[in-house]
Image 1 (cartoon, one colour):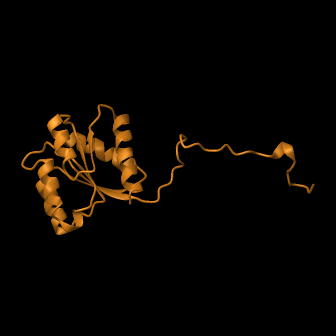
Image 2 (cartoon, rainbow, N blue to C red):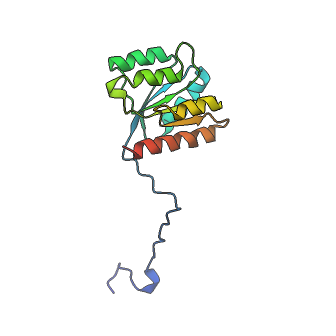
Image 3 (cartoon, helix red, strand yellow):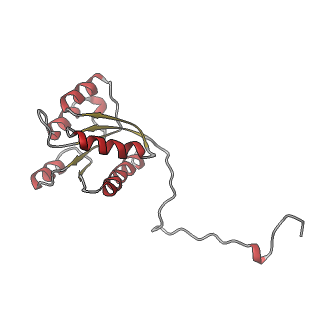
Length: 160
């Protein structure tokens, strides 16, 4: 055997086979731009903090008023890959906002996920009948919020 070269049975390392239940390796092929439409400043701050720490999030924009966000989308000033949308907001609720952005050609296929405190059955049913990708009830803990947002972001990035 040559010096500096290991070999023989003692140096054979077997790699453990990964099973489908193992966590997949972290692989970030895509990054996304997210628009958050949320009227509660405390929720906005918390959600943006979680999003900005996520490795797949390239940028975040937030609007505390649906009408203002709609005007920016129509003008082409915002080009999100994902919209996170509250339902209960003053002046224009999330369902009206969703209907309005679907009339914008560049937003017809953009994924929209309701991120709301509302667990009312009528809201869940209306969301299921809308063009929204999903419905997430805001959890009570930061760890659970991170987990739910990660699941949404992974789904959107893997679907691209």
